[in-house]
Image (tube, rainbow, N blue to C red):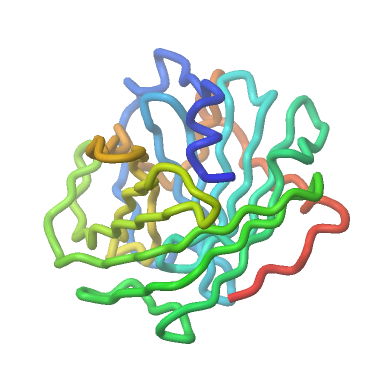
Length: 228
């Protein structure tokens, strides 16, 4: 189970949302959350007290919500989905990693990680991939009218039981200390990065303009604790 699942589910923004005023560009501490508007989803990202991240993806009517707990470099440790208030067991997982270096690196230029990723799904199934992660060099990044410095992060996964290579593209925004997900591909197809259309420190839930921030759904019962 990979993060691309949430993209395929059709999280569509209300048309007026993308045209909302940019407002003040977020900077510094993102503990209170930063909101990002993509062509197909709205995401709230915040850095937790232990340095890991939490991303919450909202559907256009807020009937589907997906929560991702990730390491600073963007690798998922836990994910679950809620539809109309009900947990989707086949879309909820905990993920562990074993590899080199033993501690997964922080997002710094030139960092690498190679290992095995094991995803345990709440419905009882399990998936294992070899994983190779590379952090690139700093480059300018524009999100709407806001300018940041980004570190591109490329992740390649190969299913250990056979199947096509899978590629994820992410970007670590150095000024905000957070990593955002940009795109996915399989096999030899290139990843087409999908940058956010806007960024804001103010909540903008789909279909509601500005609205109070929404607490993330509780973790799935019985899910294994994340393993770094």
